[in-house]
Length: 385
Image 1 (spheres, rainbow, N blue to C red):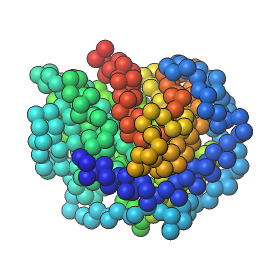
Image 2: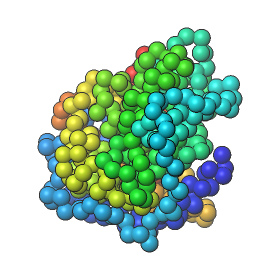
Image 3: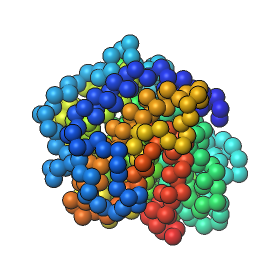
């Protein structure tokens, strides 16, 4: 656990200069009145106050001035992880390995034709597994590791869900992948076909193996928050609810486009390989503001902090500068994105619970605190309330 956390901290330190520059650039693109640290009351539902979006659903204000290619220059990119080897002999999705880590914790190895390799999938089992139970698919941030999920090492999932009657599915791998299907294999970050894996290949396998009741919701933080919201609007028939923390939910307005490009290029990926021409139809199809109508009827919980140092940032702590400079800048940009999303849902009359914390940075410790706040929404969506 601690080794995984240390690796994530080390990666974050190496990425400092690039992330701060991109996050600040994202804020600069916003209207002057949009980057307020004052927030609506926590738990407000569907309010359109604090507006940063327009009725167009977040259309670009500059006609696509952010070009394709690496947003973050090579010298400022983080360490590039080794790319998993691809195989041509996987023709059918199948569970090919199973490791019981504890009574309520299993790690499966899944052969994926879409990803052309084997993928680790960790599952927290229900407290009472005597009857079919619903599932939560939990997605994480840009550093999504091949060995284990951030929800295990840093997100408090094992402790929080230990007494809940739900399967928690945590996919391993997908650095910079956005949990989406890319148009092309990228020389820097490899083959990404995560949407196909998460929505088509994996669910039938787990539903059969775990004897679930077929009900599914989504949970995501950071890159995983955006990925989860995209999956929710692109597959509305599959997911009943969604809880997301500290994400950006647009892809075609200025800040959303820049956020995606920063995520992809931070590990050496080229956004040109993602969804076609930047700002084009492929990007619009993944924009949750433009496609927000597909979220109607779902139970939705969205949280973000202001980016100001909070209760977990203490001067003198070893990573104080990282937490304040990196985490603060990213969270401030996510705050702006979340206000835009709130305004969009409010304009459409789609109910959602928004929690704007007055202080806090982009860090797992804050997302751990969000789990109990998000649980009533997830519990309701899963039919457990």
